[in-house]
Amino acid sequence: MEHEPPSEVTQLLQVWRGGDRDALDALLPLVYKELRRVAHFQLRNERPNHTLQSAALVHEAYLRLVGLSRPHWESRTHFFAIAAQLMRQILSTERWERTKQILEEALRIAPEHRPAYLDLVCGADSELRAEVESLIASHARQAASEVT
Image (cartoon, rainbow, N blue to C red; front, top):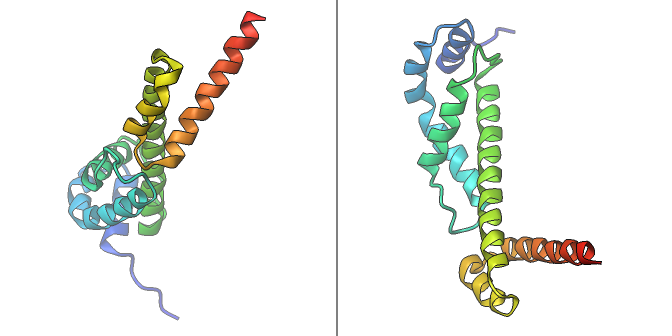
């Protein structure tokens, strides 16, 4: 049984792994469309009003990928799996930053005005609202235990 020769992408990844950073210039046009597809898929699992668009997520992930020194890519598939993982990390970090921002603002607001604020900032994102409400409750419990 004959093995197919490695794809152009796999060859460029191997050259990059060998330390030739010029391979990146040739690689981007070959992988960009697929990275956009991966980003679009990742964003489908996020809230509808997410601040990142597919292109921005691709660029952020690509910057992190090229920042790796001598990556050990095994194949084109491995490269895209790592890219998808990086995109999930980026989205998770952004989600936590947004949650933290909403929590901090909610804690500055009088408790009786918080539901209206959360209606406004969370919209239809029930997961975000539940997460913020849980953190507010945790904050209240912690404050109460420090008083007693």
